[in-house]
Image (cartoon, rainbow, N blue to C red; front, side):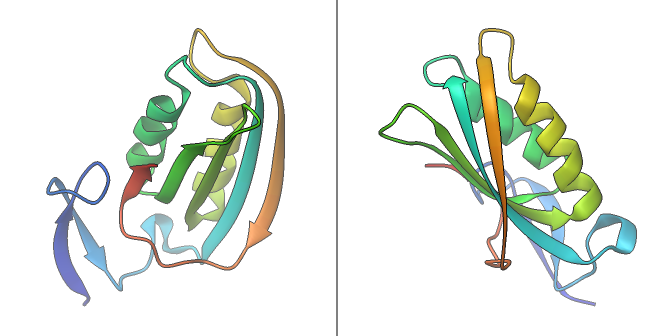
Length: 116
């Protein structure tokens, strides 16, 4: 069994998670970098990503980019990451997603999900 810590938004105290245990569903940990383009800044997009990532026990971050896009780095099970990708393509009510680029990457070992 791994170390039990409490993590919430941005790695702060909150819901329990077991570090070093298998991800939910027992799947292998994968990581993806998503670049979301369109009307995705100033519409609550990063907070939408935070809620959806945390509900799937994904770790990583979401941050605005200078070109108007949002970068999302997330790791977890392939199933949870694919679910997140579907939601990233929709976005919150006031967003207008034009495209989502997806790139596989090595897991970083982040704890919690953060907005940067």
